[in-house]
Length: 173
Image (cartoon, rainbow, N blue to C red; front, side, top):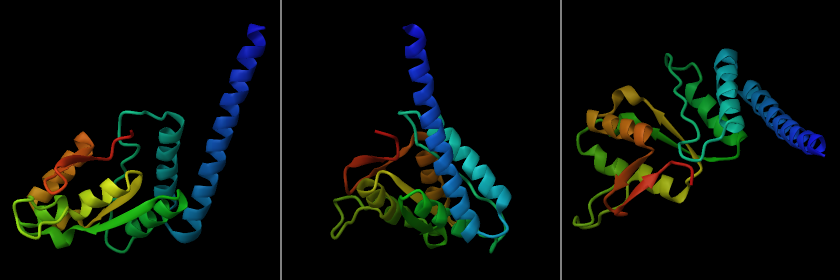
């Protein structure tokens, strides 16, 4: 009877692996139909997505991908298409708009002591959409304080929003 229990477990694993592979095939097909000339990037993304889906961890950010290359090569289009193909909301943050020192407050929120203070653009989006794709475009053009927030978000999985008075997390809950 332990053999039948082992067989059932193997069948369940095969079905879930089969389901993951079917999902990945559909994602790859959709990405390839929209984003042309980036087959290697699509393959690398799909491989990374497999790792995320097959070896899911409950204590980290599910995935973080960095697309690097010259302007006009499809990095942002690929990221937008990824969000659509996996059924997640997305936010595109053009970091060239965060090039001055005070931009950090727009990114993570104004302290409540300021009149007309508002939550940060990024933190409020994450707070309202915990399962999300965030596309940080033009990273090289943002202020160093914003780059430091990006590093904190990447390393720790959260950033503090003074308006919301809490850490806003991208970690799996």
